Image (tube, rainbow over all chains, first blue to last red; front, side, top):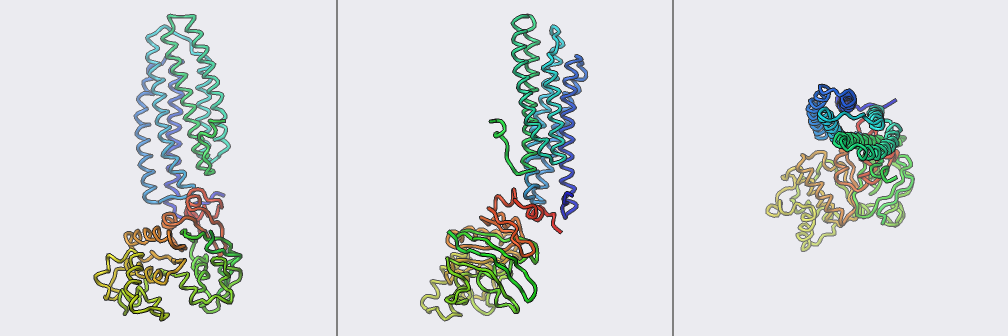
Length: 225
Length: 251
């Protein structure tokens, strides 16, 4: 059984922090889902909603930052607790950037409305699905302190990168064949780039969880493999 | 280079065993913190290192303590002289109440009749300077030691330990009776002193251990659970009992 802190107040602060991080991550996951849904369904209203929701993500980032500072000042955490607070401060930055990327996708949705219609390549949809699975795994690994799930995120990023490269070649080919579609296809390429970056941020989140759980710093090591 | 080699040290007060098979090395001119909950044997441990433990009634020990390659319990070791080599600073500052600041600083030499009158002032000045107290007391050296603030009295006790030119200074919770500013002064002093002396400090404050020491040993129920580089121990301890203690999941 997991041992609890002798101070119940401290125990509950750390629990709150974890749950705030998970809530923020779930909000970002919903934004990825909705921005891609808006892209597929050409739903401008949904795209605008995603853009508006970014304001709340920014707010949560500030709140979690402040909460971490208070815990550092009042509790002077050590060992796993210290590692948790330091990764929490980093995770919010990644999650906030991820929110910004969904906004970028949503903005592309709005721009694409004014252009000749293009079919969304399957590879982009697969990337979006994969990135959401990675984020889900990263959240679960945080909540369950499960480094194995975090490792799965790191593995899955390779397939997202591979899909990105395949899609890139496919879009270049399409552009060469249809000059009048170059502009919307460039926007789709941007969407793919944001998805690939979202995958990288999921990897960061997973690496932070590994550090929290084991004290082992796997950043850059996994990338080099 | 090793200052102390402690091999399989066990200690008792009457039937009560307070240390069980502690083995560790203390590196020369470093600061080592000993942490652990009340009753874990921290103070007994450092009291063994200058043979103060044996002064308590019913106290005994087993195992070996090697200081600079020499067995601490060897026949050639004089415990009184040993305590000059391995000085001690206690929890509460304890200057001699009726003695002046100057006499307190050199009391270790005065009491063993090894002080030439002509040397008294220069030895006191040197010790008080090393203890970072000189500038605060140089104009009132003849006032009683107890006229100083708590933090200054503790630095006077450190000066007293330094005046006999020790190799090691043991500190048993030296800041527990001091305010944060006086504590910061003592911690700064520890930082300076370890350039020339080996420091072993018992502390209840994990933050203090983290701030002042190069390596930290965690004792629990008289057993050495873990001894690591301080940075390592406070960020990623190896033993789950250390983790539980330093993150406050104890008891």
